[in-house]
Length: 103
Image 1 (cartoon, one colour):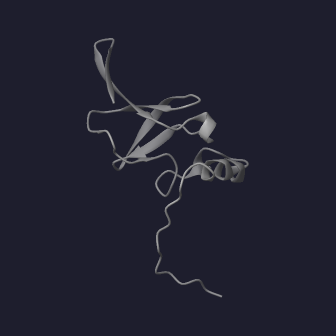
Image 2: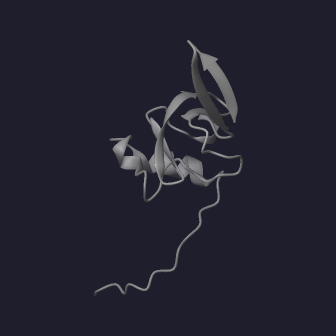
Image 3: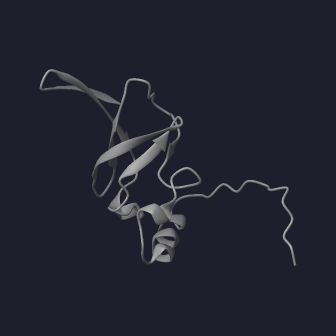
């Protein structure tokens, strides 16, 4: 997390260690951290720069896409390719559901 003074205004940036080489799509414009959306400033090959506020801490969980930040909001075509590339690099955590499927 880095603080910058830009035109006499305090701006905070967080760096997320995932980027284009990890399958992150440049159409993703926001991430979800601590029950709030934050805008992405830049996505490059190795990391994402996010504009945050001073409530964000190192090791906070960043949801790039998931239940709060659905991938189909950003990617309108070929979501399968994006998920397929990312899941070969990142582990997926599944939650057990008590819902039963209807047959």
